[in-house]
Structures are given as C-alpha cells and as structure tokens.
Image (tube, rainbow, N blue to C red; front, side, top):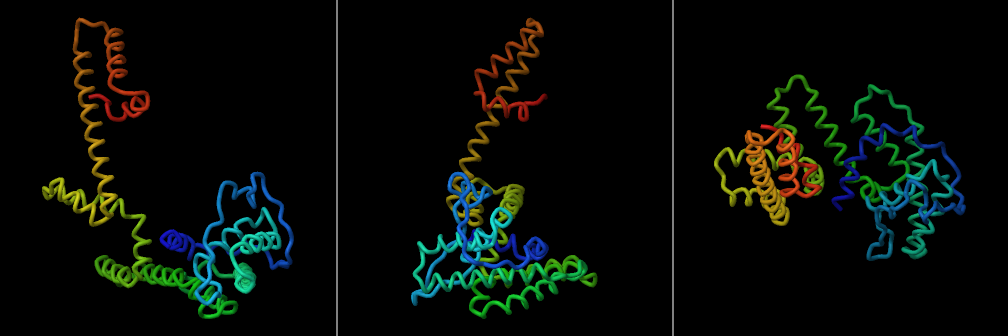
Length: 306
C-alpha cells in the first residue's frame, strides 16, 4: 500500500504535464506481441515483474483500486516499443491466469476505458498559465466521462486527495497577504487533514532530515544514548533504531581507528632520523596494517592533514 501511495504522490499532478506523449486513439483489437530477449514484454522492462496487483472482491467482482491502475500503467509504459493492440493482448494474457471470465471481461473493459481516458487527456489543450487547480479540475471532469463513482474512487481517490492538498498548499504559499508564520500554520493544518496513509507516504522522503534535526536538538540539550534511542524508536521504529545504534558504534570505532592512525602517522612524520622516502614507506606500511583495501579507499577523506 505504501509503495502504491508513493507512486501516486510522484505521478499525480506531474502526469498532467505529459498529456501530449500519448498517441492518438488506436483500435484495441487483440494481436500477439513479440517478446523481448529474455522473455520480457518490452526491452525496457527486462528484469522486471508486472507492477501492481489484481484481485477480486468477496462477490467475485473485480477489485478496482490503485493497484489495478498501477498494473495498467506498467503495461502502458511499453508504448513506443509495442502498439496499443499488442499491449492489450499481453495484459489480457497475463490476467487470464489470475481472473475468471466475468472479472477478466470487467478488467479489460476498464482497461479500454482507461486508455480512452488517457487519450482524451492527450487531446486536451491547457494554457501554460492555467493554475494547477484548474488543470486538475479539467482532468477530473474528463474522468467522469469514462468511469462511475466507485471506479473513480478506486482508481483515483488517493491521487485526487493528494492533488487537492497540493493545489491548496501552493495557493497558500503564493498568497502575498499571509505572513510566513501564517503560511506555515495553514500548511500544517492541511497536512493534518490528509488521511494517515497519505500523510505517512508524504513524510517518508523527509524522515531522515527530520530525524537528523531532532537528534541534533537532543544532543544540544544534553540527551544521553538512551534518550537518543527512544527518540529514534518513536520516529522510525525500534528495528530502525537498533540499526542506527549499530551504525553509531561502527562509526565510533572507525573514527577511533582513524584518530590512532593520524597520531602514529604524525609521529612518523616528526621522526627526524627517517628520510622522506623512509617516512613515506613507514606510513604506507602503517596504513596497510591498519586498514583493508576497501577501507583504504575511504581513508583519505577522513585522515587528511592535520
């Protein structure tokens, strides 16, 4: 679910800028597509598996959700390498092993309407100066020509909610009558109104930065190792906190080894009884004794003079 939300967050409003990449409407009669080397449907999909999932509800009807849309988009990503009829035939072949006749028919009908919807977007002309809310509104109006309410909620519900959030956030940030503090307050309120799953998906990419800032604040206030662990466990979970603790120990050990090396290297450099060549040889021998080949690649960045 998190991966699907990440896909929608990355592709929602951005997709509206690429409508013209879609070909004009083409017949969707089945044809047998040729396989790429290695059994992949298209060369660009070599080494991948179909993205998304397909399933049925308890009633046996097709489950219409963002996972199904991701599956459609996975096959449609082969446009340019295969024709639409070939893509449709390959998708149908894939679904035949997963769905019974009624659900399969429903899936292919939905796919045909999804393609028609995307082609309709490709034919739209939207002025560059049109704001995001207007562009999203036009796209949503086009969708209603092809899908019923349940299908709209399943295929686009999360994307619509996030796009609405994005449009409102941009409007707040662009409002010259608001102070920086008021903008921050209103954006934070928008964040709180997002569904938990969408809010978590939005926060995921900035978690490392947020955690680093919280750790820095804790250390400035004299927080000890246990307080640091509790902070991490609360923000990223116990398993991640355990891994971070191990990384801290490894980093501390590495820094101690580098400090020892720098001290001994300095002693060699100050030994007036050795020639410059002998000093270089002694430092090289010291490095070889203390660090393996992989560690030696990292060493210059940590052991630069002084």
